[in-house]
Length: 156
Image 1: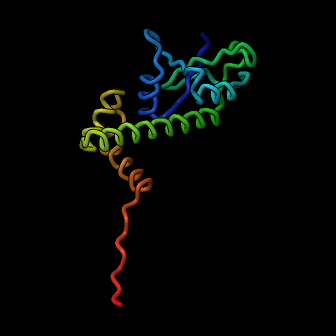
Image 2: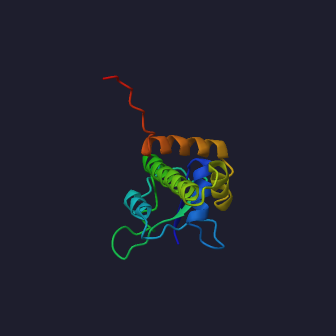
């Protein structure tokens, strides 16, 4: 298994390590059914001679397809590719938070803060505060389901 390390926000690294964990291993392996798997596969390139040794807080097992780029040769992800992976992980994280919290709040009438705390506990998230996730949920909810405005009363 060929791996590479990339630098992402600390809370995204925590999330990815739980979501895509390989039991007993330090690296993550993204399933081939995930969109992110194909993004990583497309971003793989030959390592330039001037490239630094891989460093970062998230180690990813590179996709090994039957046809296409071989990880033994194409085992480098450039900085712009790392930023793209971070953006996709960020989007996946927040979509998962919002869906998880919204389901508990609407289905079980659970308090929002408790729902966010359950999510953080389930995924071992410690690098971002519960209050930041609650605030994000409120913003998302107001964008998706805006409150109805009352019409002004006009006399005839």
